[in-house]
Image 1 (cartoon, rainbow, N blue to C red):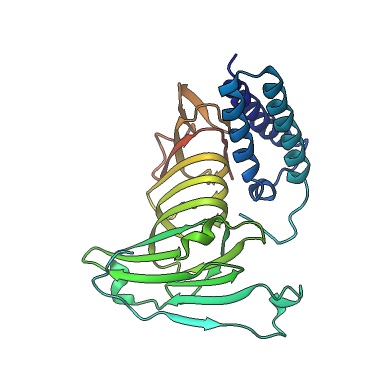
Image 2 (cartoon, rainbow, N blue to C red):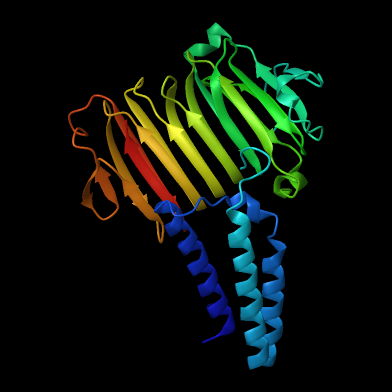
Amino acid sequence: MKLDRLIWGIILLFIGGVLLLENFGVINFYWRNVWSFWPVFLIIAGLNILFNKNNSQTGSIISIGVLVVALCFLFYKGQQVPAHGNWWGRQFKKDVDINIEHNNDDNDEDDKDNDTSYNHLRLSEPFVAADNTKKTILNISGGGISFNLDGETSELINADVKKRHGNFSLKKLLTDSATVLTFQMDDKKSKWNFGDGGNDVNFKLNKEANWDILMKLGAGEANFDFANYKVRTFRFDGGAAALDIKLGDLLPITDVIVKSGVADVKIKVPTTSGCRIKTKTGLSAKDFDGFEKLSDGVYETSNYKTSTKKIFINLDGGLSNFEVSRY
């Protein structure tokens, strides 16, 4: 067997084993703890190239030994509770002024952890009643960030950013049919800087708006409770990420599209809505409590055909864990 195939096989067994142990509640594994050690895989790849070329049996044993030791170390680090909370350019036709407030008050309740390496930034957009007849599209992008939905606001959107690195911006574009908001990390070099901890973003959204939310998350965590919000579409494109969302039944149709690499995805849907799931999940684990399997990759709730409220979920993942439950 070629060395490169053996190495990839061991890595896949490691990832699958960790996900399986998590699924059965044997361990709690924090992927962000191991992300900062990604250069280890460059070393392993270098050893693989070097010894494959020389067809050295001793070199192959060294490569496998280094890999096993590295994975054991990552397995140990991944089970340690993180020290810093949760982890995880276009031209615009019309830009609207953004309210930015820096909070460096030493007496702030959020700073009682004595961690002075964090900076606070608040970004917001006002709610305009005349624009509420349009749909509101929220584009979110970044990496090494923990995103949370932290309640409602009388503004259209409010973002409270607790950051260690990177620059963040919130822009608004008005079109004939939509209000487009773009929240992003502008410093691309910082998107993969996990060594000193990540960034935390707490959103507050207006409940009157009709939301389409499109999210790209390289690595990180997103926890959104949309039960009381009118979310027409939620699209998630993530790498090594954790996603936990709760949907409501305020609209007749809701679409959820999730594409992920190595991710832990949990979705809660109301029992008052009929729900259909389509999956293309490769080696991913699936747990759809309360759903009936109709065919390969297709699942439905018993009230799907009769319900006036419907939720469509499309799941596409490589080595991920997908859970959909009803509440």
